Length: 398
Ligand SMILES: CC(C)=CCC/C(C)=C/CC/C(C)=C/CC/C(C)=C/[C@@H]1[C@@H](COP(=O)(O)OP(=O)(O)O)[C@]1(C)CC/C=C(\C)CC/C=C(\C)CCC=C(C)C
Image (cartoon, rainbow, N blue to C red; front, side, top):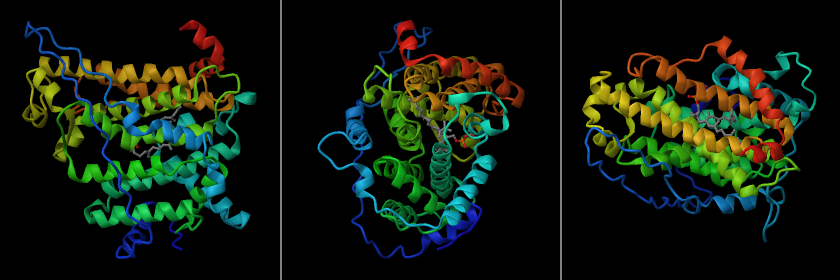
């Protein structure tokens, strides 16, 4: 077991035993992309409305994930399938502490939303997440962050398909109760306590595979699939931890769709914020056909010049990201009361990045859209108010 503290220093463990596959390699089927091309406007000055729905959820196998995580249908509850690990309580406490420290260090936008309520000294009563839930979110965050670091971190130069295959084997080991290191052990403990399906985790690894070979996106459907893999999956992992309000009057499927949509909104925002940085790495996570509809091409992205065309293009991209945040709102108020505040906070905080891009006059080439700490803190009471609306009240308002 390698009990390294920092995320990246744990990475050398990953390459070991790549020649051995104890499990059949998963066949991750690419979802069928339904491409609906927006009609060209008759008047070339009238900019087109962009396609909003990327890929039908049926192709992402959402329903199957929902059933497995809800332990519905004709299948065994997930906990019965996972081997119950036996860890010393002190070991587990240390494992979660390390996860918490990593969250504080890395989760710049989300930390306020998820992890720092204990510092706020508010009389929040039942609006606070339980310790068990917080710990589970830390463990999931750390696994996601380490997965992302494989392709984006300092050791990304050592990336090859073998590394991701080995990481996927390690994931199976986590779910089988055989963690490789201390941080994995926290996730093993979490998956033994909450009904988490392995598929969203596997899909995230698939997103990293995609990121190693694909640096251009023809259309929104292709981009949507990438966003699902790297961020929509996080939404799906989060719902079993946060729980659904007993008084919720919508279907579980609707809540999962909202969670997925929050991931898509977050990732689209992340992409828009990082256009300049990504271009420097030769990557363009923008639909090429939509660039063309605005008279732009990837050359304009690499030229890093803010023109009127770019501004118009960005306005539409921002509109679409907001569309996904709006869809997510419906589900945020259906979650268990104790989980709503952090979800509303992170939703509102991340959405603020879009305002910051506008404030920068759409210059996401040389300026990084940033939401200051004061703005973030001011947001928290507002999120608290939103979170207090019962699931029923919100539906009534719609
Ligand atoms: C909101 C929240 C904090 C969720 C749970 C915490 C968690 C498990 C986060 C994992 C994030 C992560 C490290 C993902 C790896 C891939 C990646 C980097 C995705 C991008 C995240 C932002 O990362 P970045 O480090 O760039 O961020 P900042 O520097 O801090 O700005 C993503 C943009 C994806 C994030 C996606 C989510 C957190 C999904 C949110 C959805 C829910 C929590 C579901 C809520 C439920 C309903 C019903 C609405």
